Image (cartoon, rainbow, N blue to C red; front, side, top):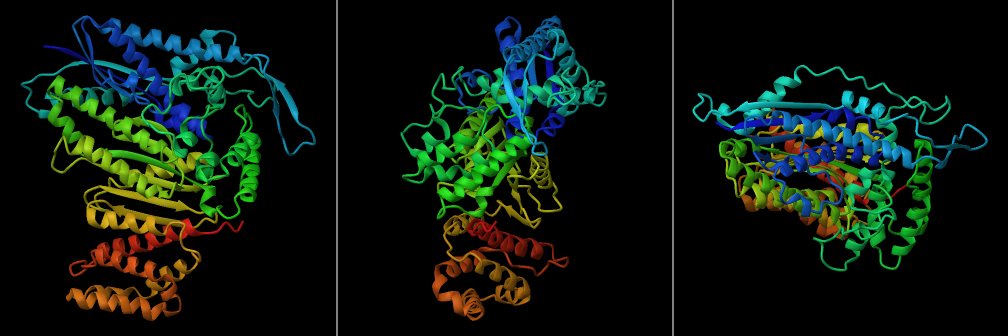
Length: 598
């Protein structure tokens, strides 16, 4: 009977929650993916008696994912008896090697001089970096206590009574999660940097300092295939053939660092014909790849906003101050695992399909102006602009959904079918990053709740305005006809309504006349329903109807596609969802048309 090993690593969520900047969030995620990748590489090199089943690894070396981590926090290995010590030694040696590389980064920064701006003081203070840690063992001590790496061996009995016990993946999960119920105490406070009191890095851990300087670490060079001058060693757009403006803007330039929120939010301005160089000049003038103090970086972002508004007076919109953070995860994927997890070959084929999806998904994210953080199969985390090249974040989610359907769910048919759920937070560029990330994650988790909407196959989006106003939108993808109608409506009117303020009046009046609209949509004769709906809009908005006829016609088509059948809806649950969706769509379109009045 073959022996299996499950390996997991953490604490991922806790580490992501400490990130204050986009680069720190990326590095916090990529760090775990990098370590698991190194485990897998060494396990594969052993070859004799050891086989990695999950994730599929033979494709990932050639897969270009623009810095996104591909390796999950869970590995399954099939091994001969007596290989436990070999696997354990691989884990320990890689932890040692990782600590050495972090220490070498600290060594390489010695003598670097940087300014620390404090607007409360009249002058700027200068600091010279020295390695605050005496030797590699201090770094190793820290990471050995910080990382929670679990290793467990198990056997799978093909004749076990419970189906779960016959499944390689489920059995491994169960064993690992049992271990995780008793986590080790983590001494994250020691060692700390021995800088003097007013130094910005004083009393910070090796991890906190290292993440703050992400753009100068070996991790950044590894993630983006760069050499010392920042130029790609292999084409970052190998999968994106052509000489288009989009390809040049998002991935053919030297990478100085992971994109800031402002770079992501405003990236579409770099596509404007004749102004590409102006956009680049403004970004390059203010973005410093060695920021230390958050205040210093905040001032730079404010300066970029001011300069961009001046350089792009006709193109600048309020949404250019906002960025989307997207969490995506699969539902019913466990059913696929249940059907393939008893067969090692089938499991590897499915793992390969997930890698294929991750690769194509990151292509789509990048060519839509986004910056991927993690792409582990059906699990995605990325930043994206609200609008890029005429395409909204909603259309990007639709394209990712189609990719998953083509590559995974149409090939591995289950009942119910495997689908994707999305949590999207759209927040102001000064909104705390950890709160925006948590909001996105929690929105995605809410979709799991069958009481909200059966089927889980949905997008849960929230625009958190700078004013404090929240604009929610919950879209089920179950009705494909309606789903595509929503995408078309949003795309058709994003940034194309000259006086976007009238959308607010429409939303407000629809709320006050909700019962009238319900009565119209309850009309059983389809022809009469269509006529009554048109008259409803003509009568209520007669002064602006003629000048916005195309908009009103499309809005009526959208409403007619919605399910307004509330006959057995005693608790108004479906009614609230339908009207909430209608208001959400209109508010989102209004948001994309709003002028920046700050």
